[in-house]
Length: 471
Image (cartoon, rainbow, N blue to C red):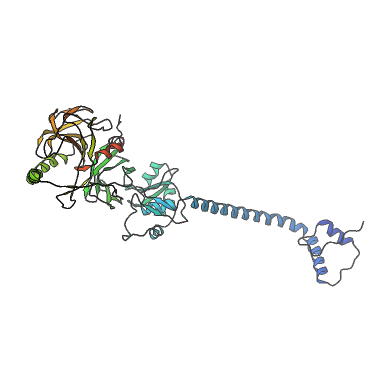
């Protein structure tokens, strides 16, 4: 059977049957370029068949290895790209989200982050409670961001990892090279890299965006018990510890306004940790214009100042551990209405709004029982010029509650009271225009909104931070 002449235009090597056919077929290869090229292919294939068999195998093995590596790299790049796309383009700043920690967390340059989020002060850290823009190339990773006084050996032991791996990961020449307080990243699953105060393992704020006029604070856990101080702008917080657990407390006052004060926390003699904190003034403040005539207009301002000075000497005392074990409750069960809330701006006789209501007023019938909202020690029980019949309770941790304009008192200084215990009766004594209970609450010698304290259950939030039960 005659063999079929192969196609001269087909690409690639001829197969074996085509070679045998062409060798045995009695036709003449004349001088066209195509014919000579075909003859060369046949000759080359015949002479080098054995050699090419082994050579092809080696070449294709190398090609396969190279292609596998390229595929792996490409897959990794595609995975990184997919991960970057899943990272939100905006980030809500939490405590510890410093420029350095964010750069490590999202594997980007800190300068790039600052450029996307400019501020007049380039050294200022991101503000807690605000949003940052992240670059499209951000790829999130997990682990610990640390600044420790000791070397890498202690860190390696604490995290059960080779010190040389930590040194290589952080571009250190050696794990024995001293670098106190320099940033260290240690990979770990499900841990968000954040730069906390040195010696802290956790840090939580009572409000991510602070509200003026409310009690605020932080709670934290330390690696080991140490002395801690904390300041919000120029106001030192009361800091209390229970072993390695601690809370810091203060208030801001109703005139604090919208701003970004800097929270500073220092552990022992270590470098202080600083981060701005967003506070935003609510838009719902009430305004009152009061007109004082006759006797009310002749109020003795000196008596008011002296009474306030005497009480502040009590309120400024940090009075030992928390005396309560439960959530706070309202100090009155039967009342007609809340006649005035905390923070109401007040103008007297057409003047500026230079003062605000420092408590909560409950309009009620005279003689209605007034109750202790939580356990504590009575520190004031007497009739005062401005506040009339007054009872002040020390609840511990620098937290005081006051009950004023009472018609009668049922406790005395030094008494220990329990939740729901009657401490007096509603009246209209002191500078008062009718029967009502004025209830105020101070934290770190700052008046705060007692209703917000109840709504946020700050009492139990504080106890939880000290690892104490709240029933």
